[in-house]
Length: 480
Image (tube, rainbow, N blue to C red; front, side, top):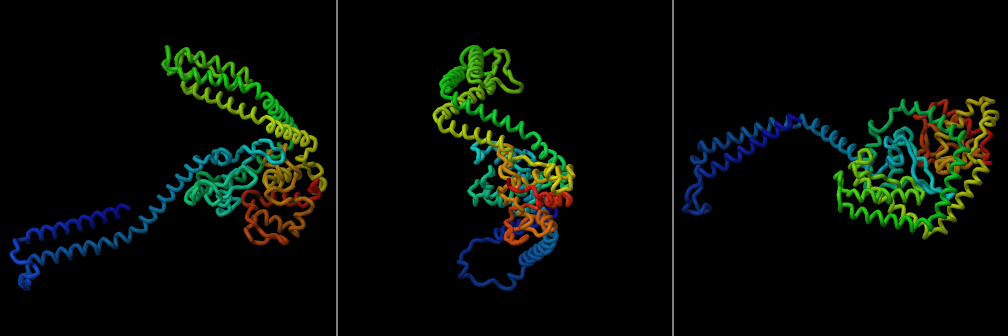
């Protein structure tokens, strides 16, 4: 890069000097013209072949020599310059991709580091707002190739919280932004090393088995929460007037907060801080929401740790106004919301009775793994951790919404012997799960890939893949 700069500088200075020389000579040679140039007699050879011509030709030879030397030097260093530009472009794209990841809040659902998280979603069977399990994406390129990942980014996933982000899918990102986001997702800073991904297998299996063990408690909590939701909808008409009145009082007190003595100099008059504290206390008590209670101390500008009282007051008033607005909407639509909530509670109570999420591991052990309870448990844990998201309906929505194992969702149902029909032997099925599907490429018997099935060969061992296949080809996946 430095050689290029020197060469360009020398060439530029030489060109400037040459132009200056020509201009100076032309000025010196000017005289008063008595006859128009086109009418003047031609210049003789003696005049032309003068020292002036010699100087001009010598200057041209020197400049030509400089150019002759400069061009090869520039050519030699050009590749480094271009490589440097590519590197700089890639670094800039990575920075913009990281910014897009934050700007469009990908980490809100998938985790700040891409390790997985949850997303708010209304589950269609129950009509209940759930915390949908969003997958980890810091290992996604071990499962999908870049074009498949790009497809999901551009078009999203229907029937899930994942929206379309690309313009072609109806999202806000143009092609360049999608490319830059992809650069970030594939970067070493974001992607986990493969050895770390493999270390997550056992914790993932344990977590999946724990979900089965704690399912009854989760169901009880879900029913209690839905019951509380119904009670809050029923109470909304009585609470809305209280909330709106308190919100108006708080806004009025905040508007007059600059009037009067302000002992701590925080922009809130002492009287206003006392009034707001009383209003917030009443709101928390009368609306049954302790998060609305905020205490402002007139003796200090920061009642809360690291937050100015004025900012705290503004946030608290906004929260109270939001509660009042939500209560008004709930009260105005009480019949519809109550019907949905009651239907959701009935769904949960039926789900608690049916226990469709249950997997009888001892039976799996007896019928498929020769009575080996530990191996059967691992096979079930592997399936739930890595396969159930796409092949068990409702799994990502949580225990209450989970349907029988292998019931099908984004991927096909796996019960009633389908795996054995689709694949004539275990080896072919293991190979398919390891590699995944490729769009329009055939697999198994009469199967045609769509690209939706990821490959798990880079994130699971061969032994674990074989356990999953044994489980899926066993006798317990009946759909009942």
